[in-house]
Image (tube, rainbow, N blue to C red; front, side, top):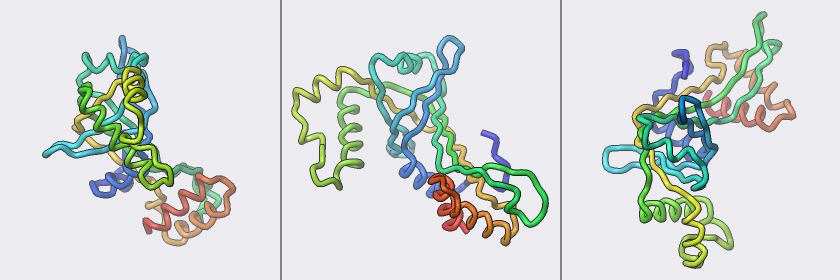
Length: 203
């Protein structure tokens, strides 16, 4: 990912927090020389000294079969993004787009049955545990789990490189920055308002 110096994120804790909040990503590999992609929920974990992305996809999805012949895959995660009008600047300029994005490169491998069950259990804990009628691994019948597990393939990606960008008008002066936040708050778009919130926190 091309990242101008002023927009590059080097703080690992910030990236980690971003991945916890924006865990739905796009996995990209190649099949017969052509890029293919699947949109999936991921978990970002640590095992000893290495970091991993874990996930699962449908057994019928041909992408998991590319792992055997792929040295490196790419997972992309997108945060809020918004159009920035140059009419919000003090001086004449061109419009742009603000965004948050993380690219993760790594080496893939298929999870064993036991590893997949553990990963799914953790996934349910993350998104269900706080709910009134939580659907957790231990609350589902063994018959249902056995049936559903036959239809998916689990995988993990050992992280080899992380690229992260926050393009949040850091290159604008204070007056422009404050005006951009205000104008984004006035937009009807939920994405624009979310971007305004992010920019307020960053400043």
